[in-house]
Image (cartoon, rainbow, N blue to C red; front, side, top):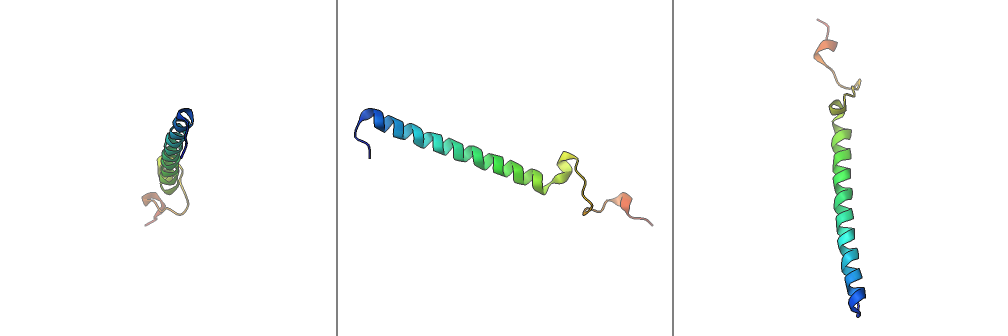
Length: 57
């Protein structure tokens, strides 16, 4: 625990900064995982996906 008023304000400000940065990092991670697991959204086509046009009758 801090004893001086200015030090207490700094500790609170740093706490809010860390909370905001962790929230921002979580949002970037979720966006990255969403785009990584859904390559068709970016227009990337993989050979692992079979489309209707690939099937010959």
